[in-house]
Length: 177
Image (cartoon, rainbow, N blue to C red; front, top):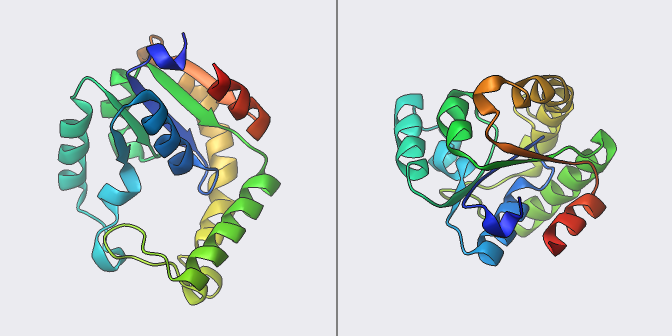
């Protein structure tokens, strides 16, 4: 299966691995609508959208014929994954991911970049908070490495093509197709 023949793609991986960047690039390349789950889940002032509203919105958007979704929200997995034709797992090393995330977070903080719904990352929240994205990545990476292989061989997703990429070179090769 070529990506160009695929109309419904899910991109998964640890926080900071590059899911959104890949999603936006594929969206432009394949002319498919991009659904950024963090943008749907994170409301203004980092207040999360209630689960029922989030689930309903994701269900509505992924009931369409064409889309690319990035994200790892377990509460919508059984809605999104069965509808997908391909799942791309960005399974990079922890060191690579942590470095990328660290640099991205510093850049966003220093440039005061607006993320979703007016939210911004701050150095204070990144380094001096229990909700630090860096701390989340430390716990998230081993959890994803353990759970994804089991989920991806589940019979209910047998129809979905799984593409596991371990390095940026693997990704570059995929994008050349």
